[in-house]
Image (cartoon, rainbow, N blue to C red; front, side, top):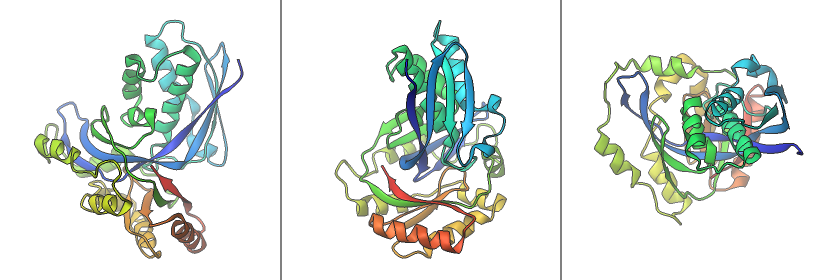
Length: 295
């Protein structure tokens, strides 16, 4: 068979509420998630051995491939599907690592989609979904890579239909460990911050299909990212990125994604987003910046 190719699109948390910490130590979240038009590329060449090679501009940041979520996802799927067809993966790494945009999770989801194609599995196969969650909390949402309201530890997804959002993503080049950010919250096991009924109510808060960009930005602005303050304490450059985005012309909303350090801003049109990204690249040549769209 010829090589199969999938993209691992960057995940952007437009909002992120920390509902509380469960007794098992995991944190319950509520997050509106969209996906950017920038992505890693993952190629699978069918073969007898499961391997992974990293290439691309940020391949050096991937670390030891044996710890990569691509291989973890493939191994977990192989444990529940007998005689799973496998092969050699090649990951062209474009997205920053430990950056709050789910790069590793998107790559793992792309691996699962590739293995599903190779083995004739439907994307709604329960085994595929279960192993996505076992791989990592953000992998299920990346499996479909469609905008949604995500709750729990990432297992409950409610489809949303936002308009195309012109945006700029910026990362200062400093990785931020998710566990450190959640640790800085200092929540005890079993501690709740938000009532379950509040989360259910919020799920119906977002504009319906056909809602305008202005309506969506207004609704998103009423939310927040509950991890932003803790992440900024750990990595002050996050505050600098948000300030730089707010200093561009036409930035309607600037916020951190996930656990950082990548931040985003939404603009009225792609021309403004492009000019904003150029300004940031000129003023901060060491930062990673992408102008495009979220959907």
